[in-house]
Image (cartoon, rainbow, N blue to C red; front, side, top):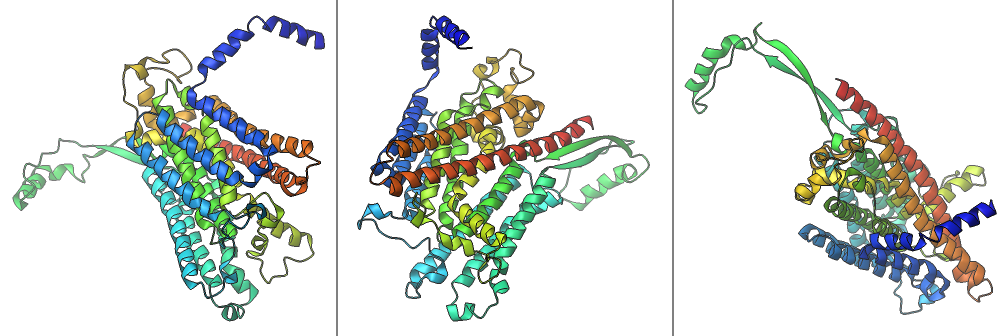
Length: 551
């Protein structure tokens, strides 16, 4: 085997230069900058100063990549506004970053990570504004979700999945606001409540979110099919020439009374109309992501609820930016299924920044142990039993790595973004010209051809005709995401091993490696579940789509 390998390498020496030259020619300026930035951020973990101030570096890198992306893309007012909005949200979210011990006295301490019940009553102004921002965050998340699903046509019908996607987020938001309002009551009044009364609202949030996810897993079809029958009449109906007067209607009825409600009507061929097919793949994913985000807000606490919302909005901005870039560079549907490396890096940077903006640092004193008592306060569940250790540990782990859970669960949206955005935002569509009509005119089973622009009018239902290409592209995207996070874990492991005799190894480098490794495992498990979820949604929608075409 070694001899065969050496022989192969000896033969490849002739074409090595050509391979490197071709790979370099395919790399764009944005991709080169993204690769260089990714490498620098990964290897810089060997520096204790970088680990201490990593939150500032990640925020600066994210802003730089967003501005670079806006500069290298076709000029668009929408893209500029979204980038400016993102930069503002990133700057605002940095307020929620907690100080490390190494930051010194110049770092201002915050109280966003503390529950309302632990704050003194003298800071009533701060408590009121904090609760107001919490209500705004819940309202914004619920309205954005409802607006998208309603615009895409995924809230038609009365199925259990549609009812869950339509009403559960709003109901859960009301319960969360009530739960946090109860925490703001005076302690003597709250202490009179029984434990089950105090935890009932949190239990309802967990229960309704779980119920909604189960319903969407059992029936992920947020589409509605309507059977319409064409009616052929025995005689041609007359034409109303004057609608503004009663005699006009009388003359119409006088000339056509036999053709209405008589035996002359005959049922013609039926026609099935589908609503929400253009976003049928992404709608269940978005609904589940919103439910998980609401649970993450509850576990993060009312103070850091806006920080979780910022992650959700930044992911939406990245989806729009990625869709705009890929639509204006498309030469085939296969090119739309390719997610550039720079877009994956933006996704991971938002994940990394949210870890800090939700009040966490790569140190054990910054673990928010108060999350272990959400819904368990005053109960006997959190005892010495196995359940008493598992449930609080699960809540603390969710609180710490909620950013990795949300980003991994929403990753398929990065693949589906161009198809749904093309359908729902007409101003993002590129100008239809001969370039788009002529490119990719070869074979490929319908993925290429001159009808590409017209085929995209179908939205995500276009992918139902190409299951192999879609699943391969999703697997490729998942591998990119894991490689970016895994390489950083490798660099942290290498830094902890090389600097094992460093004075700050157990205070900086070892905890950094532990948090990165656990975050990578959480992302790996959630991403595996996400791939299974995507396969479930795709198969269910493909079955309905085949029945629609047959009918």
